[in-house]
Image (tube, rainbow, N blue to C red):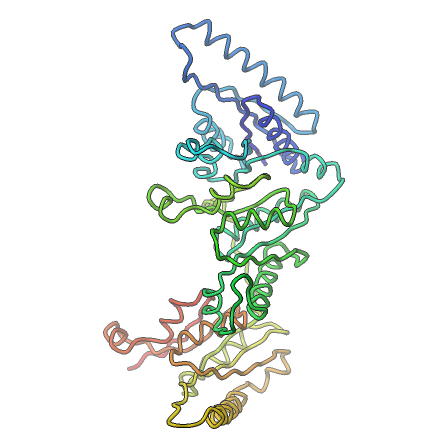
Length: 449
């Protein structure tokens, strides 16, 4: 692994270089230490002044490299002219670096917010992970084996968050880490996503919703990190994400915050904001900003494990055709949820108790019909089946919400192959599920003649 670290020979830059050397040595890679001599403000008409500046810079760079080699790192030096951020990006691209490390003072006055710091520009524009180091003591103690590195990962089930978690997986392979995965759950959004209508406290999420989120986070950690030995912290999500992540990191005494970055540009960045940028401004500890890997750097795809499959059916021949395929997708120990969406019962002058009695009777009858659809071989194959009847006026919404509650690895359903005109006139539950669900959807087509 090649690491690029920029230095201006300040105390903070020396701390960042120490962090870079420790990480590079533990990964068995090479550290490229870069000093960019920015001639802005220097009278370039005086060759002697420029030469003296460059000579002093090279001497300092060589001395710093020798210090870092004593930490066990293989170090190369580059003394270049130009803007620090541009020089570092060019060196990283040229050397095919896997990590960039820079320093930051931590808090910038308003004028710097508008212009942006070197660290922020690198985090925004770099195509490789950028670690903004604030102090080296946690890393030196970690390297000496005195304690685990306390890492907090901001996670939201996006591709950029997956990239952040994968970077942490690489980090934990070089040394002991205590990993905390933080998720910000905004009550109204989570309530609608899961179809849970419990009363909400303003400052806390309902226990049922917290249970579902923790389950999904643990499964994602098992898939990416290969372990569920992580701490899960769920924030309320009522305020801006950046400050809340920083608050969770402080509560966990984190040494390092890891966040994904979407590298927004221009107006998109101004309007939508940036969680990574907010964390960089506010965090008193080191921050790693992880971009999505380029296509050529992406690892070969792995075959995902399908653990749970949701199958909605309307009891028609077509609707039932998806059921055998759902069981076929699972390994021993997998689970299938057969579900039916029933329209809400009309009150028609009925008392609440009478309405509830009718609803319970209908649910019992429909559940029995669902159980009759379970393939006889399912039990022998070690596959478990759940049945669920949901009262809902919108089948697609009910299916998406049920998939979230069930934690479905896959939604398997049937659909007629309507023409484009027929879709516009009649709509399609399958199409609405594909559009509205964040879970993978397998559609079995039966084209009308």
